[in-house]
Length: 455
Image (tube, rainbow, N blue to C red; front, side, top):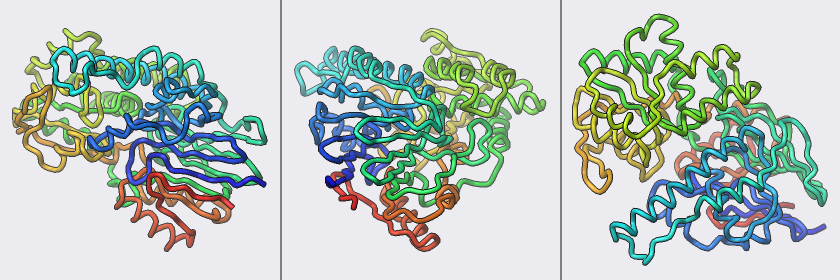
């Protein structure tokens, strides 16, 4: 039998750029194809030559639509990949939003650099463009949860629900007499919107994420924690700015605000959703009713509980509106988007609050602010930040260390080997120690570029 191997091309030693290549008998299947984000040294990896010829990859298995898992697909297609991209139906719909928006940002950034002449490249080029994103979308192949799918050449794929966001899946691949499972991003248990992560009974080899492998989320009701920040801020006449991921986090925040309003606990404070992508993603909940817990009536009411800010002029007016309010806007780590304009407008005033809602990757403005930075660079200038900075990590869509161990507890027997990926070094190491001590499983923390032979 041909040698099987697993090569870690990204998402190893970092929480971004998830890319894991399985090879058997001359065939190649890539698990996820994400962008590197955060630190400049990581972002530059997106421009490096892909470690294997994209044209030689037979298929991509996509666990979910977030850009750190899907955002490199247009570049892979641009460089010659022509195979199918297998994902769930909701992931395919969300990829249409995310990849086209990412392409627009890439093209806009290149155009801006050329117009202002600050790029060392003449001309500056986008990583990829709209045409590449559209070609990648044409290669998506949506398959149902819990439905074995024949990929040809003896490979069989099964998606199970992972929670996390709409369409997120754990991926099981049976191939060459072995079973490999990739957790993707594991969601929360008892999440108000998403279903619990589905258990997996067995695997010969397991790849497990470790984003929160070194910590536990506070056991505080998210609605109560959110209400406390809003009441504290509005009582002093301030506005709460919430940088939120347009897909997943924004919808949960809308739902929590709706619940508080229904209970009469947030009666007068207006809530604005200022993100075109988040507005579109909110409609996805109604299109995929089986992918979440809400009834159709709850879904419609919750998503309609905020004032949607559609155009740029409305967004600018909101930045100059002095009334106490809540503004939910992308992006979640304050790396771009309309939220930057709101931080510029509201950040210098101590009566306001910038409230983060989950993990902040190294090198992002979000990470700098929650670690005490009192100024941030936005649009070429430095903005003083005197607003209160808070973070509600229990709003994260990622399982914490205890929840990861709970999911692993569903295995009926230990995998031959468990690979700990998609986490920063400290988080991965802490999770390795817990798995080895509490479960007795053999674990490896691969480095980027490592190749592991699968027996």
